[in-house]
Amino acid sequence: MLHRTMLHPHTVPLLLRSFRPSFLNSSRFQSSGPEPPMRPTYDQSSVEVLKYVGPFANLTHRLKRVSLLTASISLILPLTSLSISSSVPPIGQIAVTSVALSAAVGSTALLNYCVSPYVHRLEERGGGFEATTVDFWARKVNTKFKIDDVTSSSSLSRPFCNFVAKGVPMYVHGELMNDKKLLKSLVKRELSKGEREGRSDDPEVED
Image (cartoon, rainbow, N blue to C red; front, side, top):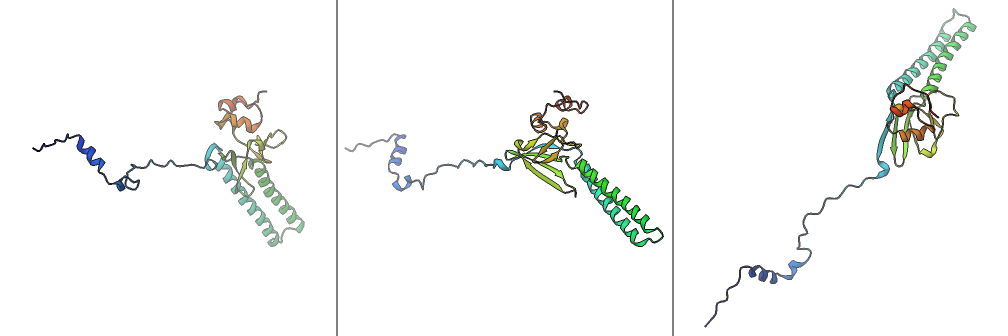
């Protein structure tokens, strides 16, 4: 007599798994699931953090351009009139031309002396800082420096300068800079009440 063997339903998957071809067990045929997304890497030296923007940056830039334009016109017109006009004696022409040239060049040079230290932007980058100023020809100049390169402006007797970075005089509105620790490191002195509280009504420096 033949006995009919009954298989339990739960044993069927086990039997099928035991007879699985060996080549299907290789890593080539095994699904490891979706790969985790790669996290983007950032170069810390290229990260820029804006620390300060000069409120009168655009105004001073335009003022320099206008000053250069008027100085150029003032240089050309007297020389042209000197070569054309004949009713005025030569000595008078030379005197008038000299006064006009002195006024044109002198005003432009004085404006440049006062406005050149004005910082338009100050950014932290790659463990250091980069300050943007404008030179005599109204071109933007970027100066890279570290805190160790900063010296006090007390030895300089020039207006609109509260610190010197790599020998370049610079000026920032202390009351408008949010990072007071950085401001104190730049100006090399105790902050005034207006600088600490964000107001410019008290320019006195407390010892």
